[in-house]
Image 1 (cartoon, rainbow, N blue to C red):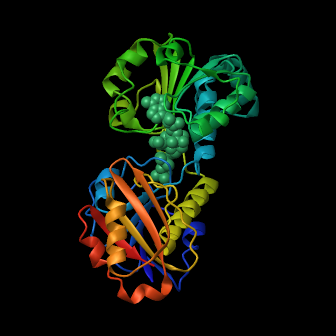
Image 2 (cartoon, rainbow, N blue to C red; image 1 turned 60 degrees about the vertical axis):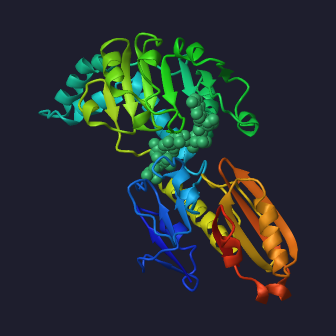
Image 3 (spheres, rainbow, N blue to C red; image 1 turned 180 degrees about the horizontal axis):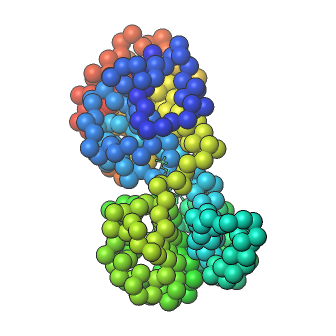
Length: 387
Ligand SMILES: NC(=O)c1ccc[n+]([C@@H]2O[C@H](COP(=O)([O-])OP(=O)(O)OC[C@H]3O[C@@H](n4cnc5c(N)ncnc54)[C@H](O)[C@@H]3O)[C@@H](O)[C@H]2O)c1
Ligand SMILES: O=C(O)[C@H](O)COP(=O)(O)O
């Protein structure tokens, strides 16, 4: 029986995939794994028995990935599972940025009128205040062409928008998802100087924190809009406030900051990007499925801190070893097994940055002689599991 603890609102459709005879959800403090959304793991105590954390969502900046990797805790996330929800909110925000839709709705809802005739007269008189423009023909710059950015780029083309993208780390597979009509900026400056709307879809990391600052804003056209549905900490708020007094007309974000609240040129949503039923279900299902795969077979899919490592589970005795990515680990593991008279039937080893993972299927009938302690004795081994 595995024990699972959840943080935040995780869709029932996902949690139902934990079969009650094999998993207990939120019934014990000592959980083998957590399923979370934006829960801040940086501040959490990580118990030694915790095997994995599954983030039902894309961004993993709320999780100390490297520290957990060195503690042998595998972190999973759900790439792409909420991309459509975010894209649709970004599209809505782009429409809000060119037409004073909210202002018009607020005006009509916040007034009282003597009768229908006076309502209609007031409307006809006032509607000139709410004239906007159209998205068609505008130029949009997208920074980060991953799951959200790529899908957005393709849809914007269908709306008659000129799209230019920038992503220095774009994978070949990622590039295949993007229409050839999306222009590619080789330098960020090519994009910034030229767009009416800039939208940010890159992750928050130590390299990108506060990256969007005066050097970006100063290159932008007067009257430009900036959309940030990625993370608040990507932006230097002081520089943004100066830019709003200068050339940037509007900032629309999913990540409200105290210093920006109430600013007449800022529209902020309470982190609603992934908050659709469809996206919450997608994320929960993907998170639970990858977590179950790991807990039940040792295979790692969609991890954010360990290499993806899959070995079809054929019911043989299996060892799963999380270890540092240093020379001769596989050799030492194989020697220890040989010393115990154990024959390796199948094996896979993958590395990612400082850590690595080795999955070994061994001959069933020899298993009595095995002691995982023999593997823990190897320096650099973080965790050994047996199946
Ligand atoms: N508002 C929300 O509710 C919500 C929902 C999902 C994701 N997000 C945020 O959006 C981010 C992107 O999500 P995604 O699903 O598209 O992730 P993704 O991993 O599919 O795409 C991120 C892209 O950013 C690119 N990138 C990395 N560093 C870059 C840089 N310095 N300049 C330009 N591009 C860079 C990567 O190469 C990648 O293609 C997430 O990391 C998360 O922070 C927010
Ligand atoms: O990175 C993400 O997936 C989003 O920010 C969604 O966060 P949430 O799951 O807390 O809504």
